[in-house]
Image 1 (tube, rainbow, N blue to C red):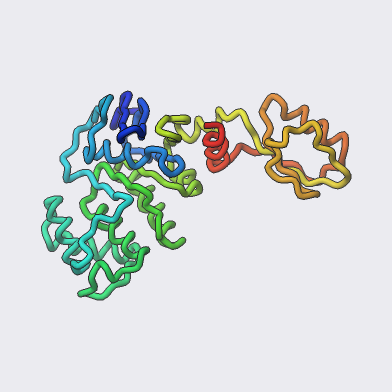
Image 2 (image 1 turned 90 degrees about the vertical axis):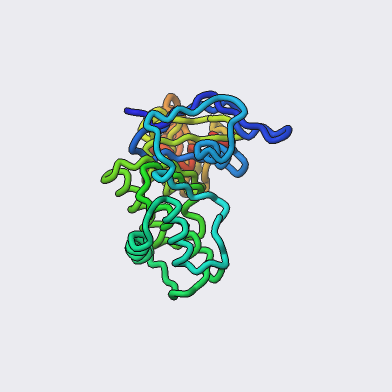
Length: 294
C-alpha cells in the first residue's frame, strides 16, 4: 500500500503538558484514516500539525505526494466562520481562497446543499443557522474545492441521522471514485467502524493501536461470548472484569481465544444452553478495552 503521508516521532508540548509523545504512523493514499481517542488524547493537535497550523516540537512529516494548499480541505472542530456574513457570501469567500470562481462555487454549492438538505433563505446569515446546519455548511465548504486531501475533525457533530448517512456515503464515494485521502477524527465508533480502512487509537498523547481495521479484527485476542441459558449458573471461575452483562438468562463474557473452549465447557456442564454466539469485539469494545488498559 502506497503511503500518502509518513509521520515520524512527532511530539508536541504545551507548557508542562505533553499533547503528543513520539507519534509515528503512516497514512495510506486514497484511504480513510481515522483517529480515535478520548477527549484530550491529542487527536486535534495531530490534525493541526498535519495542516501546518502548528509545528511539532520534535519529529517530522513527509508528504510523498506534495499538494498545493488549494487541494487540501480542513474542517476544524472549532467553527471558523464569519457569523455576520450571508451564507452565499461565506461560500464564495472560502471558494475564492481556493481559486474557485464565483459561478462555479455557486453551482457546486447548489449541488451539495441539495445533497445535504441544507435549508436556508437567500439572505440568511451564518449566525442564524442551527448547529446542525452550520456543520453542514462547513462540510460543504470543504467539499466545494474537490480536495485530494480531506481532513475532518469530528465531522458528525451536530448532524442528524439522515445527514450522518449522507456524509458516510459522500466520504465512501470520494475514496472509491476520486481516490481522495481522508483523515478524520470521531467519537462515533459505529461510523468509524463502517468507514475506516485504518484506525489509529491515541490515548494520553501516545499511540496504543494503529493498524488496518481488518488486521485489528483478525489479531484481537479477545472474543465476546453471548449466551442464553436455563438453570442456575455459578460464575466463581470467571474474572468479574470479564463479565460484560449478566442478567439471567442472558450472559455476555469477554474471553481470550485460549480459554474459549474451556469456559464454554464449564458453562455447558452447569446449565442448558439455549443460544450461544461467539463474535469478534466491535471497534467500540476494543476502544474501551484499550483506553481502560491505558
